[in-house]
Image (cartoon, rainbow, N blue to C red):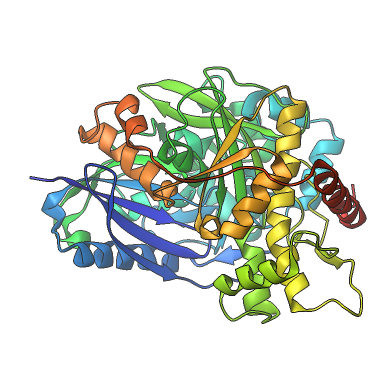
Length: 493
């Protein structure tokens, strides 16, 4: 009998569940968007209960669409928006505050002070991360300091912290499992990636009680069992990885030097560095790629906060387009030599700039500028930001021969061709572009025996289309120089 895997892909703007078969093919998908809260400038929040409710709904929906029962599942894999911070009451399971989203900038001033006080080198040495509001540590402290009684309750063990994977796991197991995996732990700024454990000095620096923290397991492990009442039968939860790490697995980037770039709400480029934790000299992050059988695999990562979210803003905020797929027609009409630049620093800039105070701008406007130029600039901004990351990687001494891409935006052929042109590398689009969910399924499949090895998984990867660079070098350099000028104008660093 074919054994299926259920992948939970809990993202920033929607929750999705995909049923995969034993060959890595998608059988059925269900997806549900949920509400975004923006209470103040630079603040981004989610309702953690709504995250759980939407996740449960899409899991049931995907199983229903696939026409299978829980008993036919070999296991569940979870992948999630990273750094987003939830703190809940261990007794009631109720969150004590909204989830603070990875994009949130409310702790920027504290991060600036920590850096000016000379703490960043220690944080980088132990975690591979910079001091930035992006990561979970300062978010945890903010909740403990701003919810009445939370700090004392945390110290006494009454509260639990988790990134979204831990929150979903807690609910699926009815509070029996308070765990996370090494990839999600590595994004908190509290986890020593060399010792593979929570770090007491970091806990002290960020004022986070150890009693809050989940147990850290491998990315493929026994995380407990989803209770029968949720899906109609008990199902082993067998794999967890943060979304970008899961995408690396889904893209089968298992050898040092292989790289993938995921285009969802944000954009995240990750380069496998094997068993070496390589420290970037160009403000990229050193992070876990995955951990299997107790062995850590490391990566260098560049994080862009706004990619697909820029198109969402053009659609929902400015209402320049009714659907994201209209953007291709605009771009075809305008062409690549577009004098307009959109810098989507809505919540600051990520790598390699790391400026939480930068804000978005549209530059190069003239009387001739229309909707087409602005929409095209939104598409191009994603590629220019990727170029920033690739240039930083190359300055660190790494060579990028090709790039495997995934995520919602990669179905746009115009964007992928412009990406290949501006990077001057071959871009490989896989047959299965939902590689984040696929990576979660692969991890669960490794744990449950559906897949025997990483080599077997590598053999399942197929390229759907390659995009080769065709742009004249002079045009490439001119366009990118215009982008660098636009970015410099919005930066506060």
